[in-house]
Amino acid sequence: MLFVNFEEVLKTYITPLNLITSWSIGSNNCSSIFLTFPQDFSWGVSSSAYQIEGGWDADGKGPSIWDVFTHTPGTMPADATGDVACDSYNRLDEDLYMLRALRVKSYRFSLSWSRIFPDGTRLSLNQKGVDYYNRLINGLLANKITPMVTIYHWDLPQALQDRGGWENIDMIDIFNDYCDFCFATFGDRVKLWMTINQPHSIAWLGYGLGTIPPSIKNPGIAPYIVAHNLIKAHAKAYHTYDDKYRTSQGGLVSIALNADWIEPKDANVPRDVESADRALQFQLGWFAHPIFKNGDYPDAMKWQVSAKSELQDLSESRLPSFTEEEKNYIKGTADMFCINHYTTKVVTFATGKLSPYSYDDDRDVLETEEPDSPTTPFAGQRAVAWGLRRLLNWIKEEYGNPQIYVTENGVPSPFPITIEDTDRIFYYKSYIDEALKAQNLDGVNVKGYLATSLMDSFEWMNGYNFLFGLHHVDFNNPNRPRTPKLAVSYSTDCLAKIRSASSVESVSNL
Ligand code: BGC
Image (cartoon, rainbow, N blue to C red; front, top):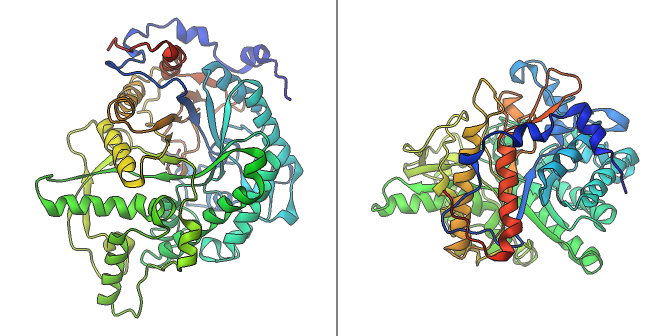
């Protein structure tokens, strides 16, 4: 076990919490009319390896596709990289201190695949990388914080990309072997696993639009192949856990999916309602339908892609199909529903183009912003809290009332950055209220909420321009000092409410 002198860490690196708890936070307390947190509600924060760790080549780590991409001149705004990021690889004690001070129940983080296997495979095992995650996991447990581990959050080892990345069917076995190693190595202490973060983003942004690494622009074909392989890889890892580890370790395995809520432009127009449902099926259902429902893609998706492919004179649908055996293998390969959610879009019917082939056009929808909700610094991503309640209800109805964890939700700070982040508090407060309405009033089985993010981080293509953290990180200072923002006090207030939930207290001071 790791013993940390937190007081030393506090003195050296972090603004004392009493500086912020002494602020007037009356209007920012965690409050909702008549709503209560369930007693066992899991409240936490999230992060991911490439976004915070830095140490990009430390102690034998291999390069990931994000290292190679950000090191290529001209790819990133202000040449931002994750080379140092929050320097969490060297500042584990500070991270543990922040988490302890937050008093969160869970921490969602990801493992850097190429830190553990520098070339992506077991043959290249890097013990120092394993040691880092052991120290992190042990430190969390010593502080009674439940680790929620994402095995792969976008940072594919470059060596595997060199073998074709997720377009290569061999990735299914390669990923399974990596997961097997993680279960065997950390599974005595980690009980909540997510195999992959946002497979939709990997397939569509990585291989369709090509806006994130590996930057492949093949919008009508590659995303479907990649998604097919990702789903099979997830299912295989789930079965490995079932066959080899579940009895002795007793954990839960899932996958973190992402979805906007999609609202029909006019709920009285049947075509708009169908289009909104279709858009949801293309985004969330693409992965959730096979895994949570029947092992197969949603009918709307199968029908659309097949019809378009026929019009494009193709001999078969661009959407691959699963054999009956594969369907049975994929169906039911998740023990809980993990959903990352940020915003709501409005949709109406629009005939998609036939050329060039594109997943986007296959959907036959026109997507716009929800016009009446507050804008955020994230263009196109308005703060539409009621959308979360609708999405949670949709998941409940569509997938048979699973246990749901909101594994990401948050908003970037506007510029100039200030630690008095009242916008963020408003965002959390309104979204959490809606999650609680879904839980308390609609009977949705919401088990937990993880705020994005623990601290300001490398935000992918937005570099360090969009900062989602509950803690500010000074990226100009080599010590990367972390400073709590006002939203920290909101989070701790919500936790106090959860802790008192056993006395069936009604939270009613809005
Ligand atoms: C990613 C997170 C990221 C967030 C905001 C999500 O899609 O999963 O890693 O922090 O977007 O950029």
